[in-house]
Every structure is written in C-alpha cells, then in structure tokens.
Amino acid sequence: MKKTMAHLHEKKNNGQKIVMLTCYDYRTAVLQEQAGVDVIFVGDSVGTNVLGYGRETEVTLDEILYHLKMVKRGVHDAYLLADMPYRTYEEPEMALMTANKLLAQGADGVKLEGMQAPVIELLHEHGIEVWAHLGYNPQFHENVAAQGKTFEDAAVLVEGALELQQAGACMLVLELIPEELADIVTKRLSIPTIGIAAGRHTDGQVLIVHDMLGMNPQKLRHVKPYFNFNEQALQAFHAYAEEVRQCQFPEEMHVRHMKESELRRVEE
Ligand code: KIV
Ligand code: NA
Image 1 (tube, rainbow, N blue to C red):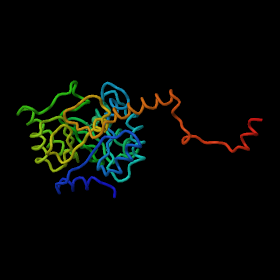
Image 2 (image 1 turned 135 degrees about the vertical axis):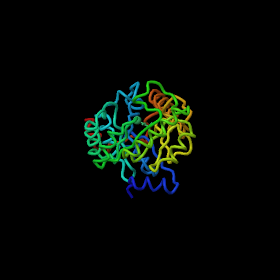
Image 3 (image 1 turned 90 degrees about the vertical axis):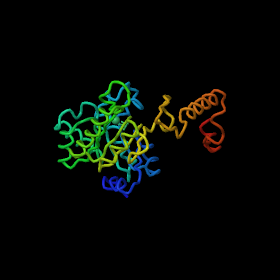
C-alpha cells in the first residue's frame, strides 16, 4: 500500500518510528522498498556521495531530476522525497517551478533547508507537500558544526520550527542538534520530525545510505555501520584482478561451447 503523508502523520500520533534513507539509484531503491523503508529520499548528498563533488551546493536541479527518475523506477509503496538543490528556491515563484519539476518526475514531496516560510506558504497553497530542514543545513553552513547548543540558539530553533509548521511544512528534518533539543521540538510540533545526528527522540530517523552501508571511509559519530561495503568490495576487486591475471577466471562453469559439428565447419 502506498505510504502517504497521512500515513506518516499517523505514525507520529501512534508513536511508531518513521524509517527514512537516502537513495540515488534504481537498484538501491528496489532493495529499500523490499526492506519496507517508509521514506526514500533523493537528497543533494548525491553530490558528495555519488558525483564526487566537494559540497552539496554544487548539485544542480538537472542532477537531482536525473537521479530521481532512476530511483522512481524502483519505488512503489514508499513515500518518495526529493531535495530542492541550492539556489533553486530563492524566490517563492522559482521554488514553485522547481517543486513542480520534481513532482512531475514522481516525487511525492520536496525538501528545502532553512527558514523559508514564504516559500513554504506558496508551495503549501499549491497543495505541495513541503518538508523543512533545520539545525545544520549543508547548503548554507560553511562548516559542519552542531547547532542549537546554547539556550539562545535552541530558542531560535524551536521558534523557527513552529513558524515553518505554521507556514505549512508537513515534516521537519532535524540535523546535528543535541538530543534534548530534538526531543523538545518533536514534542512541541504536531508534524513529525526526522532526525539525523539528532538523537533518539525524533519521530523518525534518516541516514545517508553510503554512510550506513560502510561506503564512506569517514567515520561519523551519528552513523552505525550496518555493512562494511568498502572492505568487501575492495576484497572482491582484488580477488577478481588476481584471478584474471592467474587465468583462474573464467572457469568451465562460466563459459558456453559450440556443437562439435558447427565448430568443425567454422574451423574449415
Ligand atoms: O541530502 C541529504 O542527504 C539530506 C539529509 C542529511 C537529511 O538532506
Ligand atoms: Na540535503
């Protein structure tokens, strides 16, 4: 059954956690769908994890659309979320165009970063499901640093979250803030919160798929490595290279043969 925004809100109200992962390609989407992930998210983290960029700000709308299309082919029941890239929502009208392009390629909702109440209001008026994102915002913060650690910063964040909910945001991603603050925001809001590096008390969790599969050599405090992809893949590449060089691959079981009679005619 298709997971709608109503389902996600129901989960908050029933105290059930929402499961979200980033995803950038078809095959991964199929697996996440099979595993019953609630929200499959084409994030602009595609830039640093797949495209080899230094920062999320380098990702273009065309690149998000390209990855959204391949992910969409693998998604059936999960809620499909797409990121609005840097500088594609500077004005409400511009944001509306961006969001419509993402929805046209199958996104169920769009996410943007920071205090963008007027943008959220316009999209909401057009019936678009807008996800907000507060705390550390990779598109706008130069350096990775935890947000909301002092009373003043925490108060600004709580007020900001309430304002964005009021503007019509239907979900809120909280990134890199203290667990206590995420807990307070989660209790104050009627919309669900999804945390990344925001502790245990948000309504759901999101991780970057490359981080949780062990594809990112960087060790991050908030990440649990559920798989050691890089180790396994490197071993596989070494084994393949060695076996090709030693003529141990391919073997009899991997090859096809011609019929004796046909072979003789070719050899003649
Ligand atoms: O692009 C992304 O992966 C994100 C998550 C960190 C929420 O925005
Ligand atoms: Na993002």
